[in-house]
Length: 448
Image 1 (cartoon, rainbow, N blue to C red):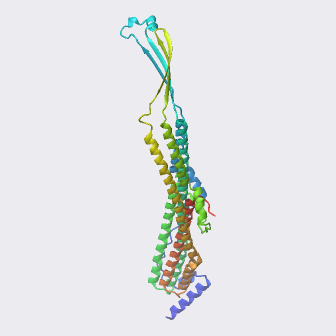
Image 2 (image 1 turned 45 degrees about the horizontal axis):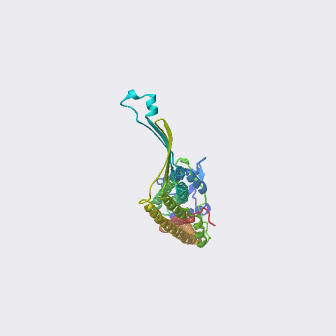
Image 3 (image 1 turned 45 degrees about the vertical axis):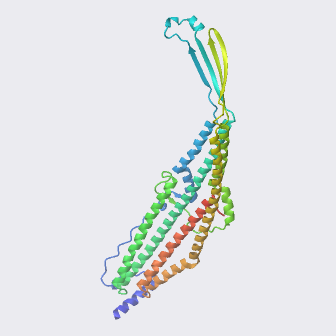
Protein backbone atom coordinates (compact mmCIF):
# COMPACT_ATOMS: atom_id res chain seq x y z
CA UNK A 1 0.00 0.00 0.00
CA UNK A 2 2.83 2.38 0.87
CA UNK A 3 4.55 1.59 -2.45
CA UNK A 4 1.38 2.41 -4.40
CA UNK A 5 1.07 5.79 -2.63
CA UNK A 6 4.68 6.62 -3.46
CA UNK A 7 4.08 5.70 -7.10
CA UNK A 8 0.94 7.86 -7.24
CA UNK A 9 2.77 10.83 -5.74
CA UNK A 10 5.56 10.51 -8.28
CA UNK A 11 3.02 10.23 -11.09
CA UNK A 12 1.17 13.40 -10.03
CA UNK A 13 4.46 15.28 -9.67
CA UNK A 14 5.56 14.37 -13.19
CA UNK A 15 2.11 15.16 -14.69
CA UNK A 16 1.97 18.59 -13.06
CA UNK A 17 5.43 19.68 -14.20
CA UNK A 18 5.47 18.12 -17.67
CA UNK A 19 2.11 19.32 -18.98
CA UNK A 20 0.56 15.87 -18.72
CA UNK A 21 3.31 14.00 -20.62
CA UNK A 22 5.16 11.39 -18.58
CA UNK A 23 8.93 11.10 -18.76
CA UNK A 24 10.62 7.78 -19.33
CA UNK A 25 11.58 7.54 -15.59
CA UNK A 26 8.00 6.80 -14.72
CA UNK A 27 7.97 3.92 -17.11
CA UNK A 28 11.05 2.51 -15.45
CA UNK A 29 9.16 2.23 -12.11
CA UNK A 30 6.14 0.59 -13.72
CA UNK A 31 5.30 -3.11 -13.90
CA UNK A 32 6.46 -5.16 -16.88
CA UNK A 33 5.56 -3.43 -20.12
CA UNK A 34 2.38 -4.48 -21.90
CA UNK A 35 2.16 -4.82 -25.68
CA UNK A 36 2.32 -1.33 -27.15
CA UNK A 37 -0.82 0.34 -28.45
CA UNK A 38 -0.90 0.07 -32.24
CA UNK A 39 -0.18 3.45 -33.78
CA UNK A 40 -3.07 5.37 -35.30
CA UNK A 41 -3.41 4.92 -39.04
CA UNK A 42 -1.66 7.54 -41.06
CA UNK A 43 -4.16 10.10 -42.32
CA UNK A 44 -3.55 11.07 -45.90
CA UNK A 45 -3.77 14.75 -46.62
CA UNK A 46 -6.97 15.77 -48.40
CA UNK A 47 -6.68 16.48 -52.09
CA UNK A 48 -6.75 20.22 -51.46
CA UNK A 49 -3.54 19.94 -49.47
CA UNK A 50 -1.64 18.21 -52.26
CA UNK A 51 0.82 20.53 -53.94
CA UNK A 52 -0.53 21.83 -57.20
CA UNK A 53 -4.13 20.63 -56.67
CA UNK A 54 -6.90 22.86 -57.96
CA UNK A 55 -8.99 24.52 -55.24
CA UNK A 56 -12.34 25.88 -56.38
CA UNK A 57 -14.41 28.57 -54.73
CA UNK A 58 -18.18 28.33 -54.93
CA UNK A 59 -18.38 30.97 -57.66
CA UNK A 60 -15.71 29.17 -59.70
CA UNK A 61 -17.53 25.86 -59.29
CA UNK A 62 -20.79 27.41 -60.48
CA UNK A 63 -19.05 28.96 -63.48
CA UNK A 64 -17.49 25.62 -64.42
CA UNK A 65 -20.86 23.92 -64.19
CA UNK A 66 -22.53 26.53 -66.39
CA UNK A 67 -19.81 26.06 -69.00
CA UNK A 68 -19.33 22.28 -68.92
CA UNK A 69 -22.41 20.56 -67.48
CA UNK A 70 -23.62 18.22 -70.22
CA UNK A 71 -27.30 18.30 -69.28
CA UNK A 72 -27.28 22.09 -69.46
CA UNK A 73 -25.39 22.05 -72.76
CA UNK A 74 -28.02 19.68 -74.15
CA UNK A 75 -30.78 22.03 -72.99
CA UNK A 76 -29.03 24.98 -74.65
CA UNK A 77 -29.26 23.25 -78.01
CA UNK A 78 -33.04 23.65 -77.84
CA UNK A 79 -32.48 27.39 -78.27
CA UNK A 80 -30.49 26.77 -81.44
CA UNK A 81 -33.16 24.36 -82.67
CA UNK A 82 -35.86 27.00 -82.20
CA UNK A 83 -33.72 29.60 -83.93
CA UNK A 84 -33.48 27.21 -86.88
CA UNK A 85 -37.27 26.93 -86.82
CA UNK A 86 -37.42 30.72 -87.13
CA UNK A 87 -35.57 30.40 -90.45
CA UNK A 88 -38.07 27.78 -91.61
CA UNK A 89 -41.03 29.90 -90.49
CA UNK A 90 -39.78 32.91 -92.46
CA UNK A 91 -39.40 31.06 -95.76
CA UNK A 92 -41.67 31.87 -98.69
CA UNK A 93 -43.23 29.09 -100.83
CA UNK A 94 -41.17 27.85 -103.75
CA UNK A 95 -42.46 28.49 -107.30
CA UNK A 96 -43.54 25.40 -109.24
CA UNK A 97 -42.27 24.77 -112.79
CA UNK A 98 -44.37 22.59 -115.08
CA UNK A 99 -43.69 21.41 -118.66
CA UNK A 100 -45.36 18.99 -121.04
CA UNK A 101 -45.18 17.75 -124.65
CA UNK A 102 -48.25 16.22 -126.31
CA UNK A 103 -49.01 14.23 -129.45
CA UNK A 104 -45.62 12.55 -129.64
CA UNK A 105 -45.70 9.87 -132.41
CA UNK A 106 -44.18 7.07 -130.36
CA UNK A 107 -45.96 4.29 -132.28
CA UNK A 108 -45.41 5.91 -135.71
CA UNK A 109 -41.81 7.06 -135.57
CA UNK A 110 -41.73 7.63 -139.33
CA UNK A 111 -43.98 10.68 -138.77
CA UNK A 112 -41.47 12.24 -136.38
CA UNK A 113 -40.34 15.04 -138.68
CA UNK A 114 -39.69 18.73 -138.25
CA UNK A 115 -42.94 19.62 -139.92
CA UNK A 116 -44.86 17.24 -137.68
CA UNK A 117 -43.27 18.67 -134.55
CA UNK A 118 -44.01 22.21 -135.65
CA UNK A 119 -47.51 21.68 -136.97
CA UNK A 120 -49.00 18.86 -134.89
CA UNK A 121 -47.27 18.51 -131.54
CA UNK A 122 -48.13 20.72 -128.56
CA UNK A 123 -45.65 22.10 -126.02
CA UNK A 124 -46.49 23.82 -122.73
CA UNK A 125 -44.23 25.31 -120.05
CA UNK A 126 -45.49 27.20 -117.05
CA UNK A 127 -44.66 28.62 -113.63
CA UNK A 128 -47.07 28.68 -110.68
CA UNK A 129 -46.72 30.34 -107.29
CA UNK A 130 -48.71 30.16 -104.07
CA UNK A 131 -49.64 33.61 -102.79
CA UNK A 132 -50.17 33.40 -99.01
CA UNK A 133 -52.88 35.63 -97.63
CA UNK A 134 -53.47 36.82 -94.06
CA UNK A 135 -49.76 37.53 -93.45
CA UNK A 136 -49.13 33.87 -92.73
CA UNK A 137 -45.36 34.16 -93.02
CA UNK A 138 -45.18 37.08 -90.60
CA UNK A 139 -47.36 35.26 -88.08
CA UNK A 140 -45.28 32.08 -88.44
CA UNK A 141 -42.11 34.04 -87.77
CA UNK A 142 -43.61 35.83 -84.77
CA UNK A 143 -44.83 32.56 -83.27
CA UNK A 144 -41.39 30.98 -83.76
CA UNK A 145 -39.62 33.98 -82.18
CA UNK A 146 -41.96 33.91 -79.18
CA UNK A 147 -41.29 30.19 -78.74
CA UNK A 148 -37.54 30.84 -78.86
CA UNK A 149 -37.86 33.55 -76.19
CA UNK A 150 -39.76 31.14 -73.95
CA UNK A 151 -37.14 28.45 -74.54
CA UNK A 152 -34.36 30.85 -73.53
CA UNK A 153 -36.12 31.52 -70.23
CA UNK A 154 -36.61 27.80 -69.68
CA UNK A 155 -32.89 27.19 -70.19
CA UNK A 156 -32.13 30.08 -67.83
CA UNK A 157 -34.30 28.34 -65.24
CA UNK A 158 -32.26 25.17 -65.80
CA UNK A 159 -29.19 27.25 -64.99
CA UNK A 160 -30.87 28.42 -61.79
CA UNK A 161 -31.56 24.84 -60.75
CA UNK A 162 -28.04 23.72 -61.66
CA UNK A 163 -26.56 26.59 -59.66
CA UNK A 164 -28.45 25.45 -56.57
CA UNK A 165 -27.41 21.82 -57.08
CA UNK A 166 -23.76 22.86 -57.32
CA UNK A 167 -24.03 25.09 -54.23
CA UNK A 168 -25.80 22.37 -52.26
CA UNK A 169 -23.17 19.78 -53.18
CA UNK A 170 -20.43 22.32 -52.47
CA UNK A 171 -21.79 22.69 -48.92
CA UNK A 172 -21.83 18.89 -48.61
CA UNK A 173 -18.12 18.83 -49.49
CA UNK A 174 -17.44 21.53 -46.91
CA UNK A 175 -19.39 19.59 -44.28
CA UNK A 176 -17.46 16.42 -45.09
CA UNK A 177 -14.16 18.31 -44.88
CA UNK A 178 -15.11 19.91 -41.56
CA UNK A 179 -16.22 16.54 -40.21
CA UNK A 180 -12.91 15.02 -41.29
CA UNK A 181 -10.96 17.78 -39.54
CA UNK A 182 -12.99 17.20 -36.38
CA UNK A 183 -12.44 13.43 -36.56
CA UNK A 184 -8.68 13.86 -36.97
CA UNK A 185 -8.51 16.36 -34.12
CA UNK A 186 -10.53 14.07 -31.81
CA UNK A 187 -8.43 11.06 -32.73
CA UNK A 188 -5.19 12.89 -31.98
CA UNK A 189 -6.58 14.17 -28.68
CA UNK A 190 -7.81 10.75 -27.66
CA UNK A 191 -4.51 9.18 -28.71
CA UNK A 192 -2.86 11.43 -26.14
CA UNK A 193 -5.42 10.23 -23.58
CA UNK A 194 -4.59 6.62 -24.43
CA UNK A 195 -0.88 7.34 -23.95
CA UNK A 196 -1.58 8.93 -20.56
CA UNK A 197 -3.81 6.03 -19.55
CA UNK A 198 -1.13 3.55 -20.55
CA UNK A 199 1.37 5.33 -18.35
CA UNK A 200 -1.14 5.42 -15.47
CA UNK A 201 -1.82 1.73 -15.88
CA UNK A 202 1.90 0.96 -15.82
CA UNK A 203 2.19 3.10 -12.72
CA UNK A 204 -0.63 1.13 -11.09
CA UNK A 205 -3.00 4.11 -10.97
CA UNK A 206 -5.79 2.48 -13.02
CA UNK A 207 -6.85 -1.08 -13.60
CA UNK A 208 -6.10 -3.03 -16.72
CA UNK A 209 -9.85 -3.19 -17.48
CA UNK A 210 -10.16 0.61 -17.55
CA UNK A 211 -7.08 0.92 -19.71
CA UNK A 212 -8.41 -1.62 -22.21
CA UNK A 213 -11.77 0.21 -22.37
CA UNK A 214 -9.98 3.42 -23.29
CA UNK A 215 -7.74 1.61 -25.74
CA UNK A 216 -10.73 0.01 -27.48
CA UNK A 217 -12.47 3.38 -27.65
CA UNK A 218 -9.65 4.58 -29.93
CA UNK A 219 -10.99 2.24 -32.61
CA UNK A 220 -14.16 4.33 -32.84
CA UNK A 221 -12.13 7.47 -33.44
CA UNK A 222 -10.09 5.74 -36.14
CA UNK A 223 -13.29 4.48 -37.78
CA UNK A 224 -14.72 8.01 -37.69
CA UNK A 225 -11.69 9.30 -39.56
CA UNK A 226 -11.98 6.61 -42.24
CA UNK A 227 -15.68 7.25 -42.65
CA UNK A 228 -15.12 11.00 -42.88
CA UNK A 229 -12.47 10.49 -45.56
CA UNK A 230 -14.89 8.35 -47.60
CA UNK A 231 -17.69 10.90 -47.18
CA UNK A 232 -15.50 13.68 -48.50
CA UNK A 233 -14.39 11.63 -51.51
CA UNK A 234 -18.00 10.80 -52.34
CA UNK A 235 -19.05 14.44 -51.94
CA UNK A 236 -16.28 15.57 -54.29
CA UNK A 237 -17.31 12.97 -56.85
CA UNK A 238 -20.90 14.18 -56.68
CA UNK A 239 -19.79 17.78 -57.17
CA UNK A 240 -17.55 16.80 -60.06
CA UNK A 241 -20.52 15.28 -61.85
CA UNK A 242 -22.29 18.66 -61.79
CA UNK A 243 -19.15 20.49 -62.91
CA UNK A 244 -18.53 18.19 -65.84
CA UNK A 245 -16.32 15.21 -65.15
CA UNK A 246 -13.55 16.29 -67.49
CA UNK A 247 -13.55 19.95 -66.41
CA UNK A 248 -11.49 19.28 -63.24
CA UNK A 249 -8.83 16.79 -62.23
CA UNK A 250 -9.26 13.94 -59.81
CA UNK A 251 -7.23 15.76 -57.13
CA UNK A 252 -9.33 18.94 -57.08
CA UNK A 253 -10.78 20.35 -53.86
CA UNK A 254 -12.94 23.21 -52.68
CA UNK A 255 -11.99 26.44 -50.99
CA UNK A 256 -14.20 28.74 -48.96
CA UNK A 257 -15.40 29.61 -45.48
CA UNK A 258 -17.67 27.07 -43.82
CA UNK A 259 -19.15 29.57 -41.43
CA UNK A 260 -22.33 31.35 -40.39
CA UNK A 261 -23.39 34.44 -42.32
CA UNK A 262 -26.69 36.10 -41.29
CA UNK A 263 -29.43 36.98 -43.77
CA UNK A 264 -31.27 40.18 -42.84
CA UNK A 265 -33.46 41.02 -45.86
CA UNK A 266 -37.25 41.09 -45.38
CA UNK A 267 -39.62 38.51 -46.83
CA UNK A 268 -41.61 41.10 -48.80
CA UNK A 269 -38.46 42.37 -50.48
CA UNK A 270 -37.41 38.85 -51.37
CA UNK A 271 -40.77 38.02 -52.92
CA UNK A 272 -40.80 41.24 -54.91
CA UNK A 273 -37.30 40.49 -56.18
CA UNK A 274 -38.30 36.94 -57.09
CA UNK A 275 -41.22 38.15 -59.20
CA UNK A 276 -38.71 40.15 -61.23
CA UNK A 277 -35.89 37.59 -61.38
CA UNK A 278 -37.33 34.07 -61.58
CA UNK A 279 -36.72 32.62 -65.03
CA UNK A 280 -39.50 30.04 -64.73
CA UNK A 281 -42.05 32.79 -64.06
CA UNK A 282 -40.69 34.74 -67.02
CA UNK A 283 -41.02 31.59 -69.16
CA UNK A 284 -44.65 31.23 -68.06
CA UNK A 285 -45.33 34.86 -68.96
CA UNK A 286 -43.72 34.37 -72.36
CA UNK A 287 -45.82 31.23 -72.74
CA UNK A 288 -48.92 33.43 -72.74
CA UNK A 289 -47.39 35.59 -75.48
CA UNK A 290 -46.44 32.51 -77.49
CA UNK A 291 -49.96 31.09 -77.12
CA UNK A 292 -51.45 34.33 -78.44
CA UNK A 293 -49.05 34.20 -81.39
CA UNK A 294 -50.17 30.67 -82.17
CA UNK A 295 -53.79 31.82 -82.06
CA UNK A 296 -53.08 34.63 -84.51
CA UNK A 297 -51.28 32.17 -86.76
CA UNK A 298 -54.25 29.80 -86.65
CA UNK A 299 -56.57 32.62 -87.74
CA UNK A 300 -54.16 33.53 -90.54
CA UNK A 301 -54.07 29.91 -91.67
CA UNK A 302 -57.83 30.10 -92.02
CA UNK A 303 -57.42 32.64 -94.83
CA UNK A 304 -57.66 31.22 -98.36
CA UNK A 305 -54.45 31.25 -100.38
CA UNK A 306 -54.36 31.87 -104.15
CA UNK A 307 -52.25 29.93 -106.62
CA UNK A 308 -51.33 31.85 -109.78
CA UNK A 309 -50.00 30.14 -112.92
CA UNK A 310 -48.47 31.48 -116.15
CA UNK A 311 -48.09 29.13 -119.11
CA UNK A 312 -46.39 29.37 -122.52
CA UNK A 313 -48.09 27.17 -125.14
CA UNK A 314 -47.00 26.11 -128.65
CA UNK A 315 -49.86 24.60 -130.66
CA UNK A 316 -49.92 24.16 -134.47
CA UNK A 317 -47.36 26.80 -135.28
CA UNK A 318 -49.04 29.17 -132.84
CA UNK A 319 -47.32 30.52 -129.74
CA UNK A 320 -49.70 31.60 -126.98
CA UNK A 321 -49.70 32.44 -123.32
CA UNK A 322 -52.15 31.44 -120.57
CA UNK A 323 -52.79 32.82 -117.12
CA UNK A 324 -54.63 30.78 -114.43
CA UNK A 325 -55.69 31.42 -110.87
CA UNK A 326 -57.07 28.93 -108.33
CA UNK A 327 -58.12 28.92 -104.71
CA UNK A 328 -60.14 26.78 -102.35
CA UNK A 329 -63.73 27.75 -101.66
CA UNK A 330 -63.90 28.04 -97.82
CA UNK A 331 -67.23 26.30 -97.34
CA UNK A 332 -66.26 23.56 -94.88
CA UNK A 333 -62.68 24.00 -93.69
CA UNK A 334 -61.87 27.42 -92.34
CA UNK A 335 -59.41 26.11 -89.74
CA UNK A 336 -62.11 26.43 -87.08
CA UNK A 337 -60.78 23.63 -84.89
CA UNK A 338 -57.24 24.96 -84.68
CA UNK A 339 -58.49 28.47 -84.01
CA UNK A 340 -60.61 27.18 -81.11
CA UNK A 341 -57.79 24.99 -79.76
CA UNK A 342 -55.24 27.83 -79.71
CA UNK A 343 -57.80 30.05 -78.02
CA UNK A 344 -58.14 27.50 -75.22
CA UNK A 345 -54.35 27.22 -75.14
CA UNK A 346 -54.22 30.93 -74.26
CA UNK A 347 -56.41 30.25 -71.22
CA UNK A 348 -54.15 27.34 -70.28
CA UNK A 349 -51.02 29.50 -70.54
CA UNK A 350 -52.62 32.21 -68.41
CA UNK A 351 -53.47 29.67 -65.70
CA UNK A 352 -49.92 28.32 -65.84
CA UNK A 353 -48.63 31.86 -65.40
CA UNK A 354 -50.77 32.29 -62.27
CA UNK A 355 -49.58 28.89 -61.01
CA UNK A 356 -45.96 29.89 -61.61
CA UNK A 357 -46.55 33.14 -59.74
CA UNK A 358 -47.98 31.23 -56.77
CA UNK A 359 -45.07 28.78 -56.94
CA UNK A 360 -42.57 31.63 -56.76
CA UNK A 361 -44.26 33.16 -53.73
CA UNK A 362 -44.48 29.77 -51.99
CA UNK A 363 -40.87 28.87 -52.77
CA UNK A 364 -39.59 32.13 -51.32
CA UNK A 365 -41.75 31.79 -48.21
CA UNK A 366 -40.68 28.18 -47.57
CA UNK A 367 -37.01 28.97 -48.14
CA UNK A 368 -37.19 32.07 -45.95
CA UNK A 369 -38.77 30.13 -43.07
CA UNK A 370 -36.17 27.39 -43.46
CA UNK A 371 -33.41 29.98 -43.16
CA UNK A 372 -35.04 31.47 -40.06
CA UNK A 373 -35.49 28.08 -38.42
CA UNK A 374 -31.92 26.97 -39.09
CA UNK A 375 -30.67 30.38 -38.00
CA UNK A 376 -32.35 29.89 -34.61
CA UNK A 377 -30.70 26.48 -34.22
CA UNK A 378 -27.28 27.91 -35.11
CA UNK A 379 -27.81 30.75 -32.64
CA UNK A 380 -28.48 28.26 -29.85
CA UNK A 381 -25.21 26.46 -30.50
CA UNK A 382 -23.25 29.69 -30.78
CA UNK A 383 -24.88 31.13 -27.67
CA UNK A 384 -23.02 28.75 -25.38
CA UNK A 385 -23.70 25.10 -26.08
CA UNK A 386 -20.52 24.64 -28.09
CA UNK A 387 -18.37 26.23 -25.40
CA UNK A 388 -20.17 24.30 -22.67
CA UNK A 389 -19.56 20.97 -24.40
CA UNK A 390 -15.88 21.75 -24.91
CA UNK A 391 -15.38 22.97 -21.36
CA UNK A 392 -17.15 19.91 -19.98
CA UNK A 393 -14.92 17.64 -22.03
CA UNK A 394 -11.74 19.51 -21.07
CA UNK A 395 -12.58 19.60 -17.37
CA UNK A 396 -13.52 15.94 -17.24
CA UNK A 397 -10.42 14.99 -19.24
CA UNK A 398 -8.20 17.02 -16.92
CA UNK A 399 -9.83 15.44 -13.86
CA UNK A 400 -9.63 11.94 -15.27
CA UNK A 401 -5.95 12.25 -16.15
CA UNK A 402 -5.32 13.24 -12.56
CA UNK A 403 -7.48 10.53 -11.02
CA UNK A 404 -10.30 12.85 -9.90
CA UNK A 405 -12.97 11.57 -12.37
CA UNK A 406 -14.15 8.13 -13.33
CA UNK A 407 -13.64 6.50 -16.70
CA UNK A 408 -17.36 6.53 -17.39
CA UNK A 409 -17.57 10.26 -16.71
CA UNK A 410 -14.70 10.93 -19.10
CA UNK A 411 -16.05 8.75 -21.91
CA UNK A 412 -19.50 10.28 -21.51
CA UNK A 413 -18.09 13.82 -21.69
CA UNK A 414 -16.06 12.84 -24.76
CA UNK A 415 -19.13 11.42 -26.51
CA UNK A 416 -21.19 14.51 -25.66
CA UNK A 417 -18.52 16.82 -27.03
CA UNK A 418 -18.21 14.87 -30.27
CA UNK A 419 -21.98 14.67 -30.72
CA UNK A 420 -22.39 18.40 -30.07
CA UNK A 421 -19.62 19.41 -32.46
CA UNK A 422 -20.91 17.10 -35.18
CA UNK A 423 -24.50 18.27 -34.70
CA UNK A 424 -23.36 21.90 -34.96
CA UNK A 425 -21.55 21.23 -38.22
CA UNK A 426 -24.59 19.46 -39.62
CA UNK A 427 -26.82 22.35 -38.51
CA UNK A 428 -24.44 24.82 -40.10
CA UNK A 429 -24.53 22.86 -43.35
CA UNK A 430 -28.34 22.82 -43.18
CA UNK A 431 -28.34 26.59 -42.66
CA UNK A 432 -25.99 27.24 -45.58
CA UNK A 433 -28.07 24.92 -47.77
CA UNK A 434 -31.21 26.80 -46.75
CA UNK A 435 -29.53 30.08 -47.73
CA UNK A 436 -28.69 28.60 -51.13
CA UNK A 437 -32.29 27.40 -51.40
CA UNK A 438 -33.42 30.96 -50.70
CA UNK A 439 -31.12 32.26 -53.43
CA UNK A 440 -32.61 29.74 -55.84
CA UNK A 441 -36.14 30.69 -54.81
CA UNK A 442 -35.45 34.38 -55.39
CA UNK A 443 -33.50 33.71 -58.58
CA UNK A 444 -30.38 35.68 -57.63
CA UNK A 445 -26.87 34.77 -56.50
CA UNK A 446 -26.40 37.49 -53.88
CA UNK A 447 -28.60 38.32 -50.91
CA UNK A 448 -28.15 41.46 -48.79
